[in-house]
Image (cartoon, rainbow, N blue to C red; front, side, top):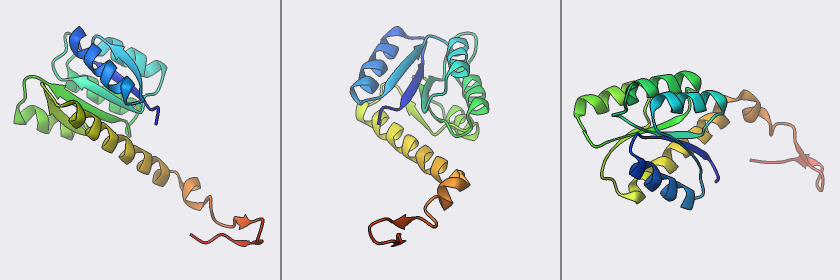
Length: 150
């Protein structure tokens, strides 16, 4: 596993909770206290996933989501909020969020959604690169000197 996850939340307690939860699950976690810091980090290094609070000071979470998707269209971005609304959820999904979770959330729910998002990204990465699709063609098994099936 060991995927990298960027957490963008202005609440220190929430950053601490997500850091502990994700680290214990085997992820490398980077924390940002607002969207500006989060985007600066995302421009310096790529992350497999991001968890972004909808309500952030200065630059809102939906704007952060949009910018993250410009940097990496395949990035798994999970939006979290204490102020859930159907409109915001729909907006987040239209802008490319993988999912939308309301606070307080169950830890297992966040990990489950994140696992699904990362798995989907791995599949897209594997299928999206034509070299991966043809990599196995023409390989032979040195022991049998015959093409490998399947």
